[in-house]
Image 1 (cartoon, rainbow, N blue to C red):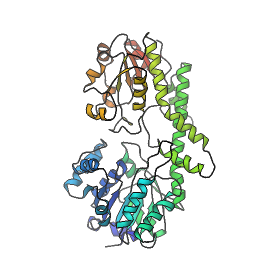
Image 2: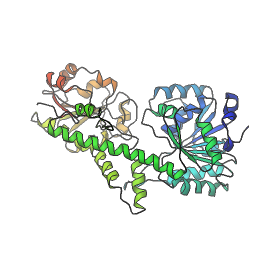
Image 3: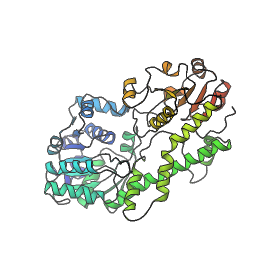
Length: 458
């Protein structure tokens, strides 16, 4: 069997050769689980490490935590074939493996500074159990220099081995919207760099088995770290601009959705939809903003974009308040039905969404809030901090205002006539997901408001 740090494409050309290699996924979250499923699908033995017993139990029982169909099927199939398992024991995962993926997600603290303590602890555990000749591929998104100054340094110190000599190391971060992990891992381009040519060649041979996307080589790891974050900041700034222009459209009596469609026909214009849905960029821009401060540089545009996008819930609150006031009511004591809590329309994932902040604002102003999301049981919503109902009917019953926050397929097919019959008169609908036709809503007798859609007449 070829040593992992020196792998070539010919060493992995058939399933029999692949099953000789063991893979550990360290810090197994949504990206890690998708990575695990894709490699186990092509005959690698994969162990997923997560310190949370609940998460590992769910994985081992074949419960898809992220409500992604392809991932669900692949997970169940590879559990049955004993090619995939999860554990809370990092030693068990690393000591039996010669290929290690580091996929830990990096949180930020109250001051919006990245917290690398968990990443450092995982690196220490890897180092203590690392086998010579292993290949480590870092998929976590981190600030420039973190791989060299924290990850490699911790691995070498805890293992007594030298990176590039005794083990290989490659940096190839994965960026994927929630619910699209499998698609992005298989088809989208990803940046790659390594500590030396041998590590780069081995990682490319391995990744080529699961992806058809371009592997974009850069000269060094620090450049790869920066390129990843620059892309996230570009997306965040674009989203902030779209949110700000949508707010302007509300005040000017213009439909942002129509403006966007026309404007995007122009070269180099890529306006996005304003929304409360989360994005993979929600925290990562802070990594670079914080790192830049260490060099005495303030990334003013990046910081302002984060501030603008973080205030989307306040903009939504003002829209709801205006809609309720237009029928001579106040938020206080009004029953407000909220449909959807996920950070993305097609998945069961509440992290990254501003819906909870919106609900808190409404409750603080005395609103009686009732929340429903078909992907969550009512007790799950309650644990997340939402005042939840078990059914859509109970949520809508005698509501003064309906707020649609996520564009789920189930919500797109709701009958406005039926909704109207269940609500108090005059019924108010606030569409933050752009799934309701404003003119149809008003024809049905609703007081209508929509994020960026300043074309209401009542």
